[in-house]
Length: 361
Image 1 (cartoon, rainbow, N blue to C red):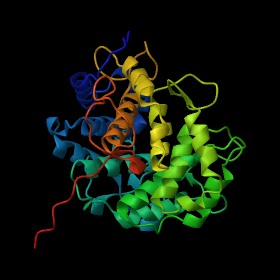
Image 2: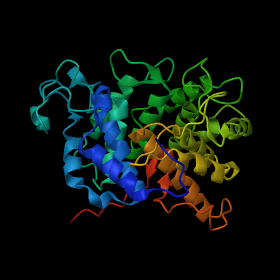
Image 3: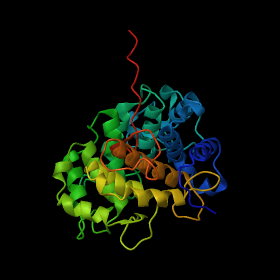
């Protein structure tokens, strides 16, 4: 059972992420196809805490690269829509297959979320993405975008399409500094087709307003340099986001507060330059109340933690802490003081990537 705490249990959370990087508990078995996404939460949780030196970065980098889906060695057009990074080693492929020897297999396809997660992990660990087949990745994005709606699918075959994958496509393009795989005009049309009657954004057209969808939409536009093309009154969106705070934040109207929505709502307000409207002490107290005695942060008080909620709780604490240090909101330096955490690149959801060493001459 979780118990309220007046401070962040840094060492317990560090141990929590390290343990989950080494071995996932049985409840995660159903998420084996998303293992790189789970690793993303652990790696960036440690990055926010400033504890990345406690893991073997090279080993993680090599594991991530082993998940890359390359163009088929005989006919690149056979799997042009499949390239990127698969979610885990569940297909049983040869580990770290030489790209020149890769042969496409049925169902061996990357997912857009796994590709985003993999690229973030690599850059956070100091890799220069030199072994990423960037043309193949951006080429696959072209196949994943719906030419009529402007939305994106997660997979080339039989996948849902919604705002989550629009965000992933924009984040991938931003990280690779190549937007050739995204029809940005169509993407903007899709975002504006998801605006809701109550001043927010749904995950798809004609769906309920949802804080996660709001972040994905706004962050996608920020990444693409198109935020001014959002076809709504931003003041109404800010109002909707602020009204989701009930101590912690709820993701939808009339729902219980949940720690991950501290990030989805707070990060969107940060992107819009309005994070000062957050009641930081009450949200911080809610997050602290969801800390588990053995490490990790749960979605609600008195429940078990998971890596996603633990990471997004820390990510919001980073935004709040660094906004206070920038003077965006007040602090009395005592009880209201927040932990010192690595600054977040809010639009990418992760701490700022480390600078790369200049190439050797």
